[in-house]
Amino acid sequence: MPSKKTGTAPTKTSSKPPATKGKGESKNYKMQFDIGTIKHLGLQMYSTLPPVIGELVSNAWDADASRVDITIPTGAITDDSEIIVKDDGDGMTDKDVRDAYLVVGRDRRKDKGDAPTKKGRRLQGRKGIGKFSAFGIAGEIEIETVKSRETSRFVMNYAKMEKNAPRREISMPPLSATGNVVKGTQVTLRQINKYRNRPINIQALRRGLARRFSIIGSSQGFNVFINGTHITPQERDLKRLLDVDTDGDQYLWEYDNVEIEPGTGWAVSGWIGALDRTNELEDGIQRGIVIFARGKMVQAPFVFDATVGQQYALSYLVGELHAEFVAKPLCTESAEV
Ligand SMILES: Nc1ncnc2c1ncn2[C@@H]1O[C@H](COP(=O)(O)OP(=O)(O)OP(=O)(O)O)[C@@H](O)[C@H]1O
Ligand SMILES: [Mg+2]
Image (cartoon, rainbow, N blue to C red):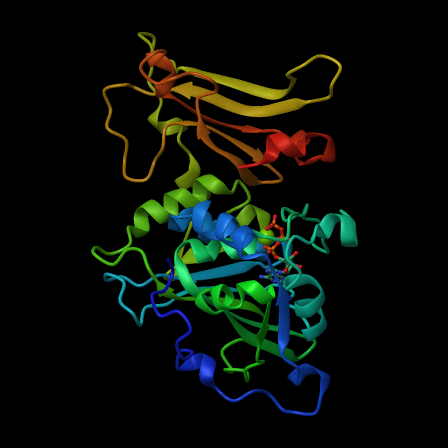
């Protein structure tokens, strides 16, 4: 569970005085929720850092951010540790927070349409639940966001949500601006209940994030930093690990817009390769093929229906396939992670 301190007083930061009273902005933020759904979406589906941070990075992409700064503690996690993900994207107004962010399960593509962003990006978000992934590792999520010179700041606390589960609604007081956010959105995770015994493996997190997004890298105008160090597209490149045959050629199969079922328009691009099976893989690199849609991983590394052991060779496959059709409504089921 994210916190043993069910129903206890808020943390020092969440007890700051509310913003100016009397205006619309000073009204408490309200969120209606079903605790079973939150448990399922956060606590059960996400238990490691790369996918959790990945959801926040994905939100930054959708908000047209050009820079995302992730701050990860370098020592073992303590009660006071914080993980921060800050983007310089569009941010949200008070109204955006209430009408979009706090509406669980809102399909933004249905609500606002699926047009590309101002920067021409295809939206990755669609289910209105990605933000809850952080409850998989943290008991508290603070949002501070700025748009049109308006700051909104509030804390979602899992223990409080559990306490309010029968009412199916939680009310969160608006907090005053810290002054640390001038543009975009900052998400701070507290009450981190993982990584208590050994420090977070930052190298593995870098690789995990690099592999989750084909849009990370300066050519896309989307730059992600961990503790100030840029994640480069090279960190996603696993082709360098491929085995070679006796002629020195890599075991590599490449696909350029290949229709997987004739007449369907379901086309994939990308590559699959075979690793040298005697090689130990570096930290954080998982074997298997990943599927991307709109630059985001929608299927974690897998080897189709092969069972490792039964079809031994398949466990040495690695690769990435881009399948835009899984983002279309017809195929939503296959896009589930
Ligand atoms: N960093 C951010 N900057 C600006 N707006 C954001 C940010 N994070 C979330 N939002 C807004 O809050 C909404 C809800 O975010 P959430 O991640 O829960 O769902 P989603 O991105 O729409 O879909 P998915 O469940 O696929 O992630 C987003 O659609 C967006 O409007
Ligand atoms: Mg999202």
